[in-house]
Image (cartoon, rainbow, N blue to C red; front, side):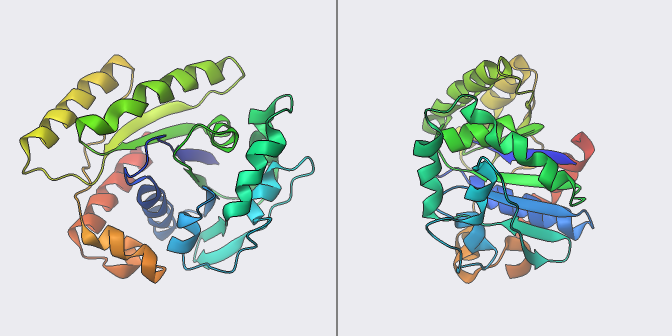
Length: 253
């Protein structure tokens, strides 16, 4: 079982769309996949058409309990989700003063392992909160989506510093790569930022994925309909972009 987290403390960079597309794409290739929604906003949950999650104690929060409990929902063939809601925010307060507070999800992984999943894909909230640290600490690999605009790169250094600090606590997550999202390749600045990130990634023993996710209204519209980009418009350009991305991920695990 491989645990892959989609992480960036900067919001508005296509993080949830990437997590949803990766989980859905892996399941469509016949890999048993579990999506974990670690964002209290529950956008990944909504993208899979689920709206009846307990807002006070969502299933994903139960994985952060002293006695963890795994509660999954089937959303498609080979694809399950542990859903989220605003009540997950309480875990930031409840875990704040606990020793080893960043390892509660990691300790829950044996429950998930018993279910025979090939992949676990985590979506995270756009901050380095306690719940985000739990998500990172549980991962084997981290993928960092970024919007190719210079002002969107501010949080990348901080994220890599956090990974280095967590390694002291036994977190061994590697950055599999950086993914350009919401890209308009007609703009010179877009190409400049991608080139800059390629150099930055190389300096940090990583890489930028060859797949570039174009800016598209399909990505914006699909969650409101409770659909993924594949189920909404499978032949769209952005769906094909994400297909290439999933192919690259599979070659890297």
